[in-house]
Image (cartoon, rainbow, N blue to C red):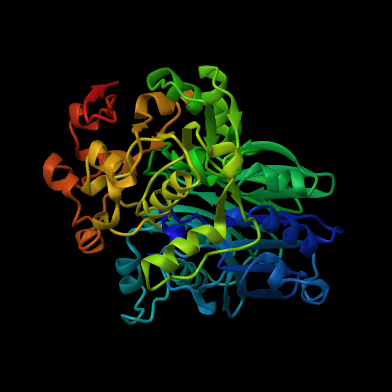
Length: 513
C-alpha cells in the first residue's frame, strides 16, 4: 500500500512547438517541465532538422533526463515532448515517449495523453503478436505506420494516414506528432484530455495545459475542439475534422478541475484555481460546522480550503507541511513503515493544531490510506476535532480513459458507505461535495464532462475483457446495479447525473444535501 495511492495517478503531458530559427529543443524542455505534474515516470523530446528525426528519452523527471549535452543533439525547427505516468504498459524505458517509427519514406514521432479501450483489437488487426504490444501508444503508432506504408511517399503522408486510422481508436487520446516538416495535434471526439494552441512570435505551440504556453512565452489562442486535428507547418495552422462519422460529444475529464490540472491552467475558458475555490465555498454552504481553523491538504486541497474559509468566516491556516522534493515513495512492507512513508510527504504543524477544532479540506479520497494516516497525525498533534470536507463526490468506479486508480475493489467509496468511511478515517464528520454542486463550481454552463469515476456511466463502451477483474470487488456496483454501459445505451433517467449526496455526522445520522 503505497501512500501515494490515495490520489489517482496523473494523466500524461504532451507538448509540441514549430518555431523556425528558435531553440525548439529548449522550448520543448521548458514546456514539458511546466507539465511535470502530469507524469513523473519518464520524459522525452523528439525533434526534426528537416531531414531526420532525433529522439531522446529516459526514465525519470525532466530535469534528470535532459541537460545541455542531451538538448544539443536535438536541433531543428520543430519538436514534441512528453512526460509519462503509466496507465497501460509497464513503467519501463521501452514505454517512454515519444515513440518513433521509420517507414522507409516516412519518419514520425508520437506522444499520447489518455488511454484507449480497444488496444487488444487494434493490435490483433495490425497482426501484432499477443504479448508484444507494450502499450496503447505502441499499438497506435503501428496503425499509423502501416497506413503510411500503404499510402506511400508524399508531402502529406502522415496527415493522410491519421485521417484514415483515427476513427479506429476508441477511448481517450490527445496526441502530438511530428514528421520531418510539421507537427500535428489531435483530440478524440469526446475531448477527454485537454490540448490547447498557442502563438509564438516565430511559430506555434501545442500543449496539454496553458501554463506550458506561458512558460515558453506563447500567448493562448484557443483549446482544440473535441474531434479536431490541427496541422502546423511553414504555411501556418490548418484545422481538419478527421472523424466524419462521429459527432463531437465533449466529455472533458471532470477531475482535471478537481485534481490533475495546475491551478493556473485555463480549461473551458475557466481558471482552475478559482473553480477549486468555488468548490470550497459550496462545501461551506452545504456542510457548515463550528470550528476554529480551516486547513487544506497540500497542494490541491488548498484552494478549496481557502474557499471554505471565505464562505464560512472561519480563519484559514496551515496544519500540514508538504515535502516538495520527493517523488513517489516506496511501497512499504509494514503498517509502521507505511505511516513513515506518509510522514515523508506530510508533517503536522503542532502549534496550529493542538486544542483546535479543524476543518480539513481535500480534493478527493481514492483508497484512503494517506487520508487515514494524515488524520492520525492530526489527532496525535492534539487536534480537538477533525471535520473532513471533500471537494468532489465519492470516487467509486475505476477510470479507463487515462487515470490510474486500480480496481473497483480497491476504491474506498465502492466498498463503504459514507458513515463507514467516516468511522474508518476516524473523523468527527465527513461531507463530500455533490456532483451538481461540483459542476456548478466549475462555472462552465453547457460544458460536457466525463464523470465515469463518480457515476459509473462510461461515455465509450468498456469491452468485457478490459472490465473483467477491474469492475469487480466493489460493494457499490452490486448494491446499486451500475454497469459499464456506454451513455448511448442508457435511458434518459439512467443517464441523468445524480444530484444527491450523503453527509455523515459524528453520531451516524445521514442528511440528504
